[in-house]
Image 1 (tube, protein in one colour):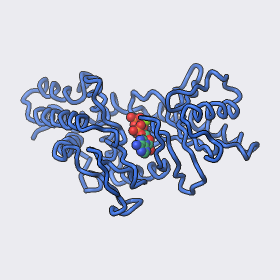
Image 2 (cartoon, protein in one colour):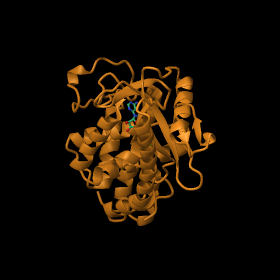
Image 3 (cartoon, helix red, strand yellow):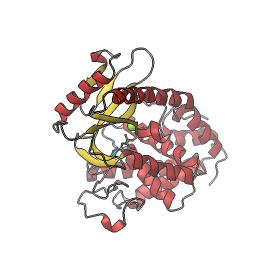
Image 4 (tube, protein in one colour):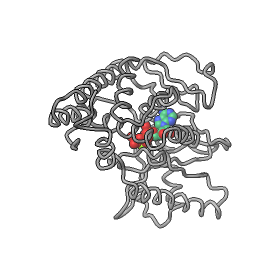
Amino acid sequence: MSSEHVSHGDIVRFGQDRVNLPKDKADEYRAQARRLREKLEGYLDEHPDFTLKKMLLSGSLAKGTALRSLNDIDVGCYISGADAPSDIAALLEYLAERLRKAFPNFSPDQVQPQTYSVTVSFRGSGLDVDIVPILYDGDPQWYGNLVSQDDGSFLKTSIPLHLEFTRKRKSAQETHFAQVVRLVKFWSRNMKRENENFRFKSFMIEMILSQLCDQGLDFSDYPEALQHFFTYVARSNMRERIVFTDYYAAGAVGSFTEPVQIIDPVNAANNVSRLYTGAQADAIVDAALDAGDAIDAALAAPTKQETVYYWQKVFGSSFQV
Ligand SMILES: Nc1ncnc2c1ncn2[C@@H]1O[C@H](COP(=O)(O)OP(=O)(O)OP(=O)(O)O)[C@@H](O)[C@H]1O
Ligand SMILES: [Mg+2]
């Protein structure tokens, strides 16, 4: 193997220039979410019985794994369960109506229910904030019923524990864990661009990489770490169950019948990949085989031009060194 023409350092630069959300943008968007959260806190101080209890930045912006192409800010909103509607459309109307109360300086049309969330749009600068309802009954670890953005079902989970879970892996391999997550997400995005039916949820990518991290894989050489990821996906055929024991014992995981089984690290009963069909899993495996072959070819290619050609098969034509 040789990385004479495209080195680890080149992939580092590609990450910084093309893949990662720049830090100043991430800070700006986090501040935007924080201002909304503080507005809600201010309203709650004056209306302690208000049923929106807390807003929390979630998703890639919270985890430090966002791509440059980020197009909205994910925020979870805890709604006390008792009198909230359980019908999803009614729940979103309810959430929108309460948010309009708490944010009186937004015009009502800036707060709009979508299919499974409520969007708060900012005039002028900033991204839209996508607010996802979480039905909440006062659990101290902030477990609640999160509305799935994939199909609107309720998923029992805890966002703060997810953030803690990811923080652990990030600090086990500083910089590198988060960077490899971003690179694999970027690859997946490129696959989606080539094939509109391709699906590979970011949270699943992150869980696969978390398992490889826990097994002691070194992420500090990016071509090698990527190759390990693709090799794992191909070898496992996406049919190996992935379980973590940070928050429950392995024995607590029951039996699932779905082809892909990546179990929520904070809830043994929640299969994060339950919606994936065998055909979709096969498509991921095929794409990983192609990517692995392309990296092998890149590492063996005799000229820089050929090397770049193979890396572009992985990352698309925006890959340049
Ligand atoms: N099926 C699920 N079960 C439990 N929690 C989930 C599930 N899907 C998403 N989540 C929660 O939502 C968060 C965001 O997930 P998502 O797959 O959108 O990834 P992301 O890190 O925000 O990536 P992207 O940059 O693609 O938006 C996860 O970190 C997790 O806390
Ligand atoms: Mg997201």
